Amino acid sequence: MKKIIVQKFGGSSVADAEKIKNVAKIAVKEKELGNDVLVVVSAMGKTTDGLVKLAREISPNPNPREMDMLLSTGEGVSIALLAMAIQETGHKARSLNAMQIGILTEAIHQNARITAIATERIKEAFANDEIVIVAGFQGITEDNEITTLGRGGSDTSAVALAGVLNAERCDIYTDVDGVYTADPRIVPNAAMIKEISYGEMLELARVGAKVLHPRSVETAKNVNMQVRVRSTFHPENEGSLVTSKQNLELMSHVRGIASDKKQVRVVFSCVPDTPGIAAKLFRRLCEENISVDMIIQSYARRQNKSNDITFTISEDDYKRSGDILWRVREEIGAIEVHINEDIAKVSIVGAGMVDTPGIAATMFEAIAGLGVNIKMIATSEIKISCLVSRNEADECVKALCKAFELEETGVL
Ligand code: ASP
Ligand code: MG
Image 1 (tube, rainbow, N blue to C red):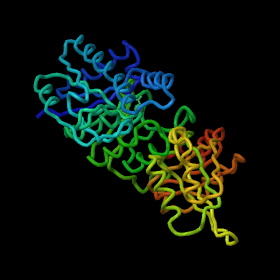
Image 2: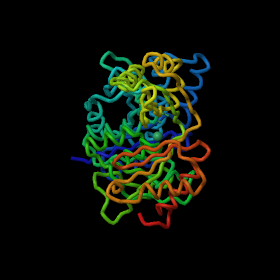
Image 3: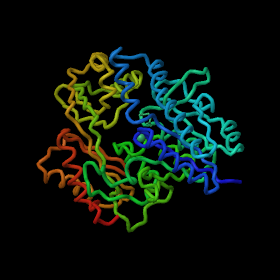
Image 4: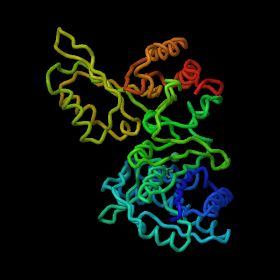
């Protein structure tokens, strides 16, 4: 049996005709090694952003089904062009969209999860010696409705396909050389991470590292698929491997730093201090499809039996939430809602953190050293997050990289 290699190329890798030809070469090279090759592609360049903008010019709150109809078109263009580019090299290629393959998802628009993938058409194409080019990001419901997987979702398409095909590996080709200890656009001397565990990568992706779609890491972990993040423009480099292997004892306790500048802080103040209030508040937000991140309930005030509940939500959820937060305020009997949009979340991630004393202190000292005020703190087993003002976030990321020796010269 031939080995199956899945490759995924992001928008910047297929931004123009020349780049598409370059991608064709990378796919053909893998095929010439004697493997079956399946290539997942995103829409060209900033196509998806352009389509979103166009929709907003027509409607401030576009219909989610029609948004999926619109956004799924971007990937349709790139698969056909890439198939042509491969055919030009003398190899056989066939482009397929999610409907043709049967990439089934839940019936939720704009953020659907993949539930099953049919492999017949892919196997048929492999048997015919074709390189298979698949549109990322899109899916289809049982009722033949088109869905999309959420922005950045092509990574998840690729890993899920690799999983059902039992692929040897899934290579995610992108415009950087791999996964870095911090965004190299913020910290130019951030170090590249050679190997990172699923758990750490998942947490880094969730707290804002944009290199991989968080759900792709979750999928990789579920199906135990080795994922290599590597550069389209330097394909000879090995890149970073995301794998089930855990850190060795000697590795540093903090593996990476990330920031998320798309958070909004919400404070419900003077909420009645009685059982069931938090339950009601967060159930209502869930009904409105608003996902909540950091949550803090403050110490209760004795005088009027009330306390404050503070949490963060994404800027996107906030923008589409209208007056929901104020309606919920009334329902739970809180006195006020305060919104702060000048918020960024800066996080450190590392599986070795729990058992290492002093990590939190080092983080807070590094931030204090900049004279930056921390507005909120939250921790999990493998991360610590602090909220700061948006314009202070990059400075904090740089200082933390230094404090935890995550620059190129540091120990990894
Ligand atoms: N084209 C989609 C987006 O821009 C999916 C992807 O690139 O992963 O979000
Ligand atoms: Mg991406």
